[in-house]
Amino acid sequence: MRITILTETFVKNMGYLGNMLPRYLARYGVDVHVVTLDLPPYYHIKDFNETYADFSRRGDLVPGMVESYDGYTLHVLPHSKLFGNMRMVGLKEKLCSIRPDVVYSLAAIGWIPLDAALIKSLLGYKLFTGSHTTASVFPLARHEASVLDPESIKGIITRAIPGRIISLFTEKCYGATKDCADIAVRYFGVQKAKIDVCPLGVDTELFRPIQDDEGKLARLELREKLTFAPSDIVCIYTGRFSEDKNPLVLANAVARLRDRGEPYRGLFIGHGVQAEAIKAIKGCVIHPFIPVDDLPRFYQVSDIGVWPTQESTSMLDAAASGLPIVVNHTLIALERINGNGITYHQNDVEDLVRVLLTLREPSARQKLGEVGARRMVDEFSWASLAKRRLSDFQDSLSHGTNA
Image (cartoon, rainbow, N blue to C red; front, side):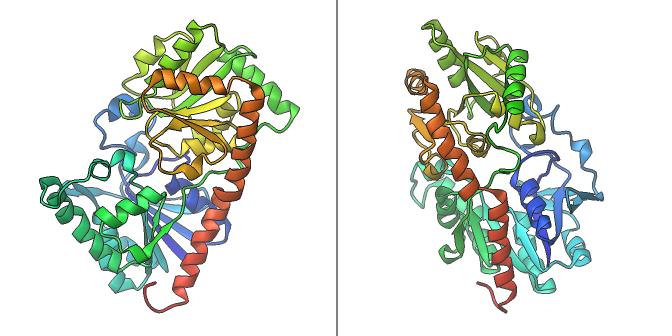
């Protein structure tokens, strides 16, 4: 079987869907091709330069490049912008040269899946899409608007109608969470019968709890390097330091705990506009973005994982590493913290302090952490999720019509 995955952006050495799914599909003997644009992830956000410019360099992806990477073939196409959305220049020619049996667009709307749907009639492959837009980043889902509202009308024209056209040509659309699936149906035109809630995964071979004395020693050594005492309770956040992610809430909670004489510290992996404010808070340590293969040891030196506002797949990495997870009360994808996490009232620093104090004792952290590590292996490992998708692809190829 030959599978082509279409993704608008790609960066090496990361744990994103576009990296991990093809890695694991290739392990099952599939001929996998990833086609991407010469754009870095998050290129569209307003504070991109302050956050990612040093870590994600556009020069790594040169149009026309084809190379073997991590068990699959990576192709880079040039981009054009039409009506505010990016388009793959030369996608038809590229797919004609690859001749895939299955094409999987990681997006359900936009030029990339629309072009893939139109090219499908020429090449006859099976088309799958995915939807990863959560309610926390999609205002219309949080504030119900009339169909006559200008934003609603714009959404129908630019998202729902083209999205329905795409859906007509697809086998399935994978919603990463229940709210992603709901938004895909209500706002992106995806047919409800073609929605399959299938979570994003975690590399449980890479992210796992400390398992031996060598790991315990490495934890102590890195903690010392980061200026953490053995008795400190280290709360880790990974991702961009932006206003919408708002890791400053965690930094302020750590400050209040330390003012009370509590041994809490904050470890922030990433960068962004809140970096200077976090750095100025006593008890907090900032570390630049790091490649995914180096990230597990930073979770292993920590004691609690905290994502104060928007959810992140990093929550899964932390849980797989044996950390209890703290997230805000608006999280819809509760399956990520079922038995291994606690919620606090979003942006309420004092409530975050209260919740962190419930995890003061090692036994409390261990109880949740063990549940999380076990659940990540059983329910969220990329090995099992790749096999699930592969089964869908094989089933679709055994039938002559769309599912």
